[in-house]
Length: 124
Image 1: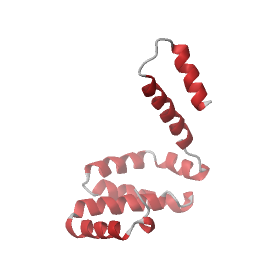
Image 2: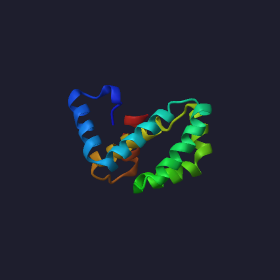
Image 3: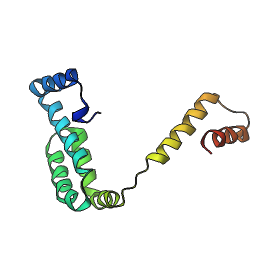
Image 4: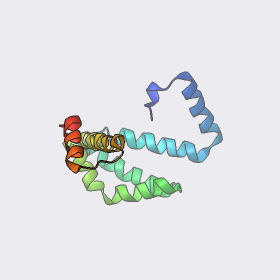
């Protein structure tokens, strides 16, 4: 989950070991890193790269990447729109996580108003 530049020496050695011993895992890693690089590009540069990535992922034979490649091909326009706008749903996901954690901490509430008040206190 780290950028390649942020890997420690031990992690780089493990990655090199994977490259030499597990071809499928190495291919998956390379596809993941390419997609990460593509999503940092401008929409104009990302357009052909994203199309190529989706085709490569679909042809990889790795089930998760085949599905992802097909989904990216279907949602190509939406992904480019997101890249153009620079917006993400990260803040919303963080709030949802806080709400779920608050609900788990309470082990159930007898009164819904108490739950709502606690969520508003933590997230409001």
